[in-house]
Length: 485
Ligand SMILES: *[C@@H]1O[C@H](CO)[C@@H](O)[C@H](O)[C@H]1NC(C)=O
Ligand SMILES: *[C@@H]1O[C@H](CO)[C@@H](O)[C@H](O)[C@H]1NC(C)=O
Ligand SMILES: *[C@@H]1O[C@H](CO)[C@@H](O)[C@H](O)[C@H]1NC(C)=O
Image (tube, rainbow, N blue to C red; front, top):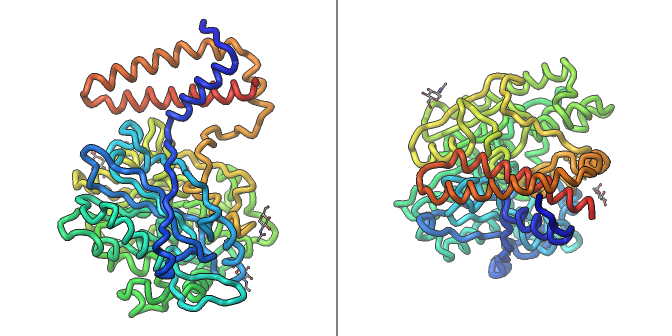
């Protein structure tokens, strides 16, 4: 048994915790963008977080766009102007990089050593807006498309102009960004570069809500009108359809020339909450508990959700059969699966045909294998986590918190699903002996991991297993010691 004082224990566990699953990356403000009028809703400079590539990844670039819904009119845009989704002054000075942004091979086998960028979202239009005029009263700037251009210019000068491999990616509103800007991104890179796009939870479909209204269609056309987005949407779509429709992937993806991969849940939880059963279509709140936890849904609600999946799969058929358009469409109740370690690459991650999202995306990117899989209908896939949302995660309740259901804005320390349930934990933790008993196991795991790494053969599966166990133990121990202090 190892005996250490409480403080030493705590320090030890905090250090281990910091080692686990995510690293923190500082913010960079693009100050010179301001003179070009490329600014956030409040007029502040755009921003991103860059973790430099290393080793063989030095000329590879992954540019990930943050998500966080949209603002569709002056009222809702004012609602986010003074928050992190409308102002870089309110953004965290460093954020956690995990999942596809992780800098460790065991968590992110194919992209860990790339230059990894997270572009912050502060325009409310998926980087499409561009209105010259600024209303003197509201002081709102609708300049998302200029922000896109300015950030790309900045990254090109920081080395992206020499990229050999490159991906734009993003989840939710950021996943839509990578669809809408896919060919534009490709055109910015050297002709010889392998450049592709990845959209995570960005395939928003145009369908009726449970009351029969075309709620999302109205919402999207308001976004496009408010931000002046039409001229920045793909001309191949706007020449045929009204600009509001050209905000929906299903009307433009068939025209995208650059290879693109779609990771999406067929029961995308954001779409269920905001497209199928938005608050306005359910004034009495019959869907409330179902939206928080799919296990609470009634048979009737599940049937409507199966109908939603049918619509979703129909909207995907426009992709055709090209292997350059990949897809991983699982039947989980989830939204954003590439930035969270648990859904991206871990021993318990969601699988389709025994393949993790991380492997499917990498196989497709490096052309090792095409990947186009659609899961069987819910609840057939046992590897799904089917996220349970806290009531405060409800997106449509409060405009300023719309982004909180996005992985991109989740607190990386919330690995413990029910941490808030302090009483339960205390019960568990009173048994201090447990903790001292777990310590030797942790040391043995750490030793085993170092040994495996030193072997220099492909032991990725064992490493992931060990690291996951370590992660759980460390989390458990650090939380326990915190609670006991
Ligand atoms: C702005 O949009 C929100 C959300 O759709 C809506 O509730 C509100 O009535 C709109 N406000 C105006 C002034 O149109
Ligand atoms: C699943 O993967 C295997 C091998 O990786 C492949 O041969 C098979 O065709 C895949 N199944 C489907 C349905 O695509
Ligand atoms: C959203 O919630 C916050 C905190 O609960 C509150 O201060 C703010 O006024 C709310 N915004 C809207 C638009 O309801």
